[in-house]
Image 1 (cartoon, helix red, strand yellow):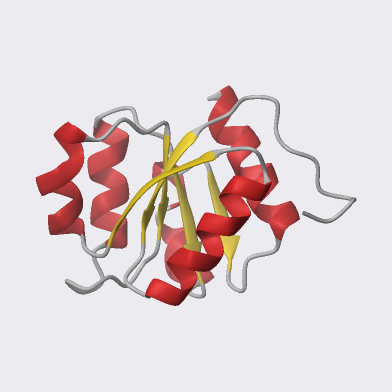
Image 2 (tube, helix red, strand yellow):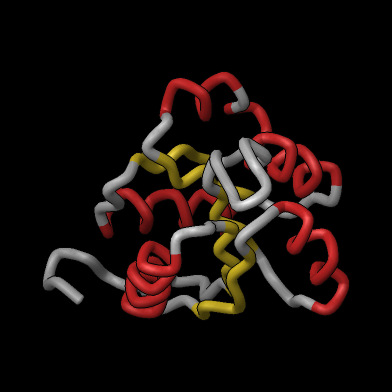
Amino acid sequence: MTADVLPSQASLRILCLEDNPLIVLHLEHMIEDLGHVFAAACESFSELKDRFSGLDVDCVLVDIDLADGRTGPEAAAWLFARNVPAVFVTGQEQIAEAFRDLVVEVVPKPVAPESLQRALAKAATG
């Protein structure tokens, strides 16, 4: 953790909806460095739906393109309907902005710890 990034006050259990294992690993380290808990990762929207009832999460980081296609916006809508805060983490900010009403924040890739910290703080406060 860098000296200018302080852990958030509220610790969240965070799921990563991302199909690239290297990005998942990177996000896992960032999440933990920020004082949160990496709860799980899913590589597709269908996997998220299959596993969701067995997961205890406070926030989901959602990529736009997943293993089952461009299903990130659909996943964000599904989470929104269940009152689960989501954050788009993507290199496709234009697409993410079109669905901005479904998420608390859009974090561009490559992910900066400060951007992720701000997004998670928004998720923690509703």
